[in-house]
Length: 287
Ligand code: 13P
Image 1 (cartoon, rainbow, N blue to C red):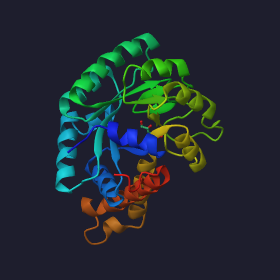
Image 2 (cartoon, rainbow, N blue to C red):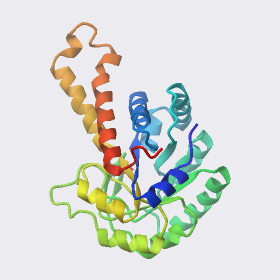
Image 3 (cartoon, rainbow, N blue to C red):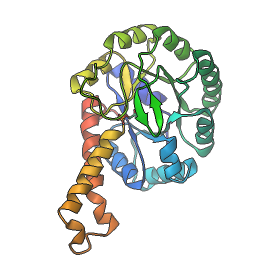
Image 4 (tube, protein in one colour):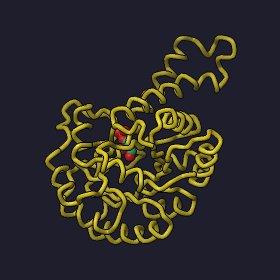
């Protein structure tokens, strides 16, 4: 059964660790992440962007697949199925499709409009027992065609959105999606500290988990980050392992062209990446 992310994140914030959100693209991704979470006895959040949802033929397909897979694999750790960077319409579609957690990203709207739309979704999610993530201050970089300039959120705006009753809050602190450029200035801990001071117990979300140095991840967790999103790193690991398999000519040996064999190294590589992140975030054994 899929669960809301509320309980796992409240525990994470209180226990000074973070739960990973790993984005899924297909069956292999989902299976690798679920099996790793179970093996490490860690709670987990499966993220689905609107683009990935479309790729998998729609949010209903995704919800049905994940729900059935949790059951068939005998997964007992808490699993939340979460819309990543949802539009207002996307959020409603995922609520309808059976997702257990929603992110409404209204960061590109003027703050009053972000607040008005977030407020409406808080009421719907509360009624249905779903968790809701809101965003203040856009995350830089590009993700599924959504480009953010990357800015530091205003702590007062964060407080205004946190006070609406959202479950968790994503705030821009200089983080970006995808690989970090050579001249990246690093995370703004000053901003994070100020946001936590205003928002108290609210679990904070760090997007763009790929490529953030370990010491910065640990410091962010110590300053109230309780959910960390990772996407690109699993994609890179999958692509790298698949390329090696093909370059070694393995697809030409015996039945090496069988998709179940061809995709196996990539699936194993995702497991290793997820394991590494869960260990770093401190969520191992916290299910
Ligand atoms: P990365 O792709 O940089 O890991 O970011 C993932 C993310 O923040 C998803 O919302």
